[in-house]
Length: 141
Image (cartoon, rainbow, N blue to C red; front, side, top):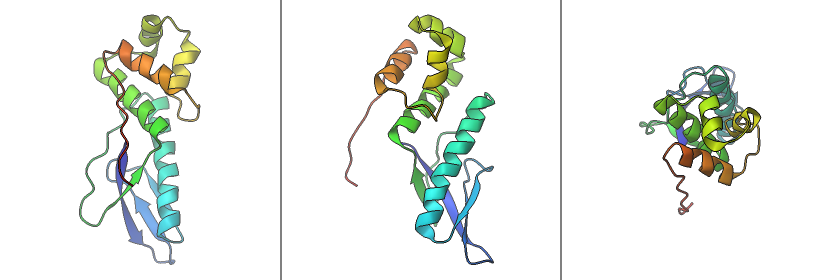
């Protein structure tokens, strides 16, 4: 669903340095490409969660440039990021979303908490309250 471009740069100590053009705060490394890309996902999720906690914008991914790789967020994380982005775009705060859904605030808090295993039907309900719908597709690997 959401794939962020990353740059892998050989470091002087034999590891691969990973940076992300869309989220400049993201920096990690790996002993090889597979480990670097796996750590990139973790670093992206950590930084996105921090931005959500700080009520900052979370940029949607750009297209990978030449020589860049893309790392994909899980479907659940992507749905939460898209929900948060839509709330920001519409100027809807968590309290307003809770009112629209007739939910308690902790329920809404969990919807945008990347560490909570929310149910997709709850994310769909929140998006519907914003006049949007979640669209899931299956593509060839």
